[in-house]
Image (cartoon, rainbow, N blue to C red; front, side):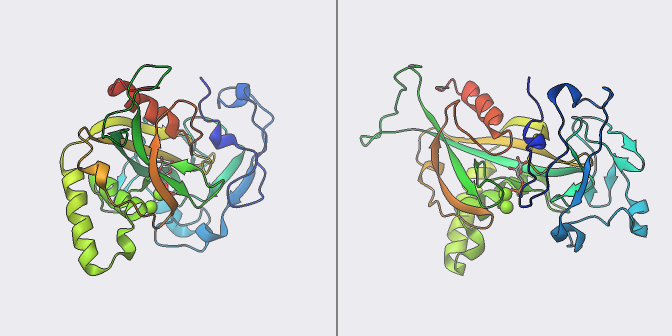
Length: 282
Ligand code: RP5
Ligand code: MG
Ligand code: MG
């Protein structure tokens, strides 16, 4: 297994900060290593937007309740209790070459949700399409192209806002990034809202809950996600959504799921699970 490799990409996203090199064998905190991580918290985070925690040197830092539900912020990790070392949360997956928060607002876990909306690939006659090699039907998911970092294609996920339930985040982020609900005119907004409700009211299938190997992760801040699959078997509901990129998405489209896709973070492993659940081509 090669966990936590995006969290060690040499140059930190949206910056020219180079991570201290961490070879595979030195990722684990229990392995001794002459380790001097580079301290980095992005200026956008240090500015103190509402979604960001106080800085380490701020008096308010002491009020943060790690490993618990801290007011409206969930600081629990899906990985279990994380260590607090020198008063800072320690990445449960190991070293990343950077200390501080980088682009992430929260010390410790930063919770996100990933809606994986799928349909079967169909030809002009509306018949499902089978892959020549695997002899299995090809599944498609709604992919967005991120505007940050390497502008990778990704699942249209996003951060769980304060006071928000994960199921609301799934629906809201899909709306913002794949349907551009934020910029839709009032009338249009209502229509999109009802399409979204149809799709997200049926219970999705939980794909994953846990640590996400994200290029923004640091030794003290990391992404965790809940990924849920919403599948349109007939292709007549989600399959016909009016895709329109918005917010953090530069483009959006239906993308064939295949094992050689090069996607953001560790999104490919979520799709592997989805393909397997549907016995789709992989
Ligand atoms: C990834 O970052 C998650 O899997 C999710 O897709 C995404 C959330 O961050 P933003 O899209 O809000 O930047 O780790
Ligand atoms: Mg978003
Ligand atoms: Mg997003």
